[in-house]
Image (cartoon, rainbow, N blue to C red; front, side):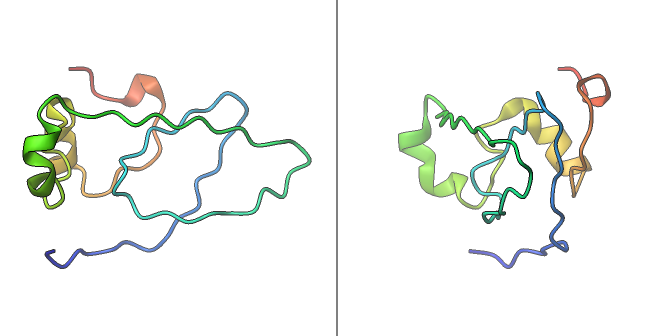
Length: 90
């Protein structure tokens, strides 16, 4: 694997109803829920139709299987939180 420049960790805060869509290769760790409210999570694992044939190449090119994200991934080295209206449309 090539060396990866890692930005400083930044905890993402959310409000009720917020959604995070996260690439499976994004470095992450558990954080204790200190609020009095339960935290619910749903995990979806999506695979590209050609994933079985290109799964090893996809390890070094994280946007290989995500055509709509390639331009965003190359222009924004670090994606900060944005509202839906601020996201680019494809």
